[in-house]
Figure 1 (cartoon, rainbow, N blue to C red):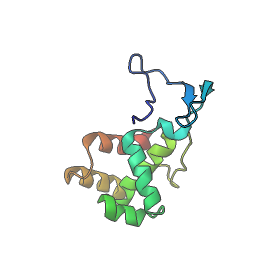
Figure 2: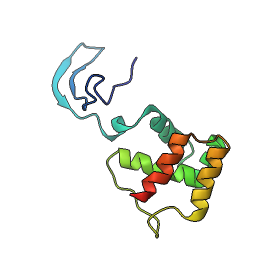
Figure 3: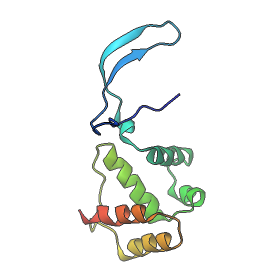
Length: 127
């Protein structure tokens, strides 16, 4: 079974679900259906959410499982919150502190995160 695409492969427009079918009784419903906030997430983000739930929301457990730093995990969670259409709360100073920035760069240097992830984590705080 395939996952529901969130963007049109032709024009990158938003996908609208218009038909639902029951495999057991073969009943079909047609109309416009909402796919929910989770449909906005990438497969990588959904995997992160699954890990978050499995770890009962405990970031220290996620650090061990994902081998990522606390700031990296927290920033990925913020990115997921934004992707779902919500506005995450900011730290008191509204961004990363020097230690968090340093940790992101260390994670990048150690190969724990990609260049794109580092740019995203650092860049999101500059908005």
